[in-house]
Image 1 (cartoon, one colour):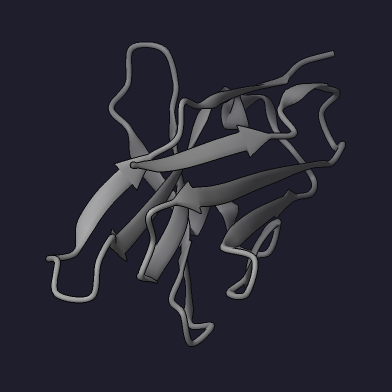
Image 2 (cartoon, helix red, strand yellow; image 1 turned 30 degrees about the vertical axis):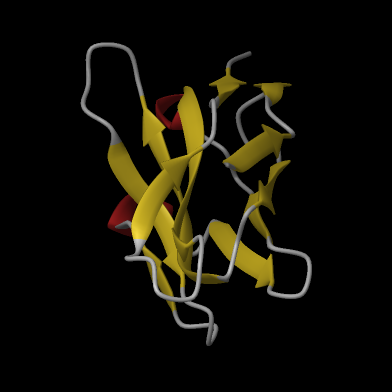
Length: 121
């Protein structure tokens, strides 16, 4: 079994910063892409940022220049540094990992339970 556990959400004022962390544990052979997604009330889940095992990153246009994704391959962790937060960043943020649980297993997507980020004065 694979678990993704997020931490770091909370309430922050506009213009503030938060750092989200996610740790993957359990039966893991290799992790390909890790990333963060978010879902605001009444909206579909959307990509925030992803990072490959080689360090290539991809960001949603709405967060470029404000958010930074990073990962530690040795620890199976991925972080999201969020700066200059706006009220429209308010959402539940989910960690995602595309990984192989065993050497010959297919790549599967795993999700964390989500952490609430609220940007409000």
